Length: 210
Image (cartoon, rainbow, N blue to C red; front, top):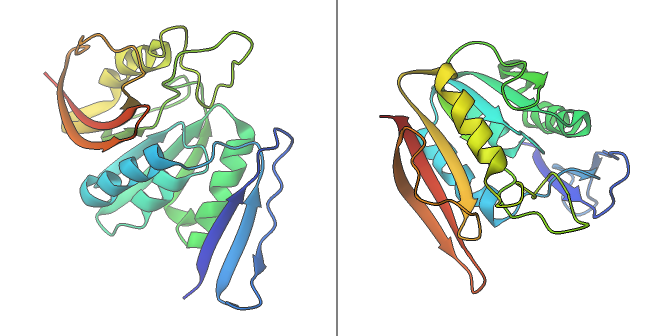
């Protein structure tokens, strides 16, 4: 068995992906990535529900480092994964993660601004969006979701309805700092996971068409 560790730097330069085995653990591959959203507590909260629930045809929107796409592709009851991101460097990183995890054959990678280039229907759609309110002078698209923090989410939810199969669902992660007002956007909205910090609470929601 080969284990893969992904290291992310704070640099906003080009991706630098360098696999290497460690001297102590020769079966561990270390991959360093730059300028791609670093998986954090939100990623791992969402990942747990991807492992538990995803099946059939899966879309990982805003795939970033590919953590959710690779997790889904590793499940035997997932038939295909589409990983979409507007950032070509993120797509490159996600491909490398998939390659080293042995699931590249199950994932299709698409450069797309949300659903712009996404075709077809899915059993599950996964989205870890940029969900924090933008700050003046700080417009990092990996976390800034607009003035209220909801603008990207709202665009996503408006378009996602056209890509859901009957009985399918969305897994969405967001923060108590996100400016969601209680509008369900035409979905049945169930909070299935929470993680509390002193400065915010992270939520994982399962959304189904009403």
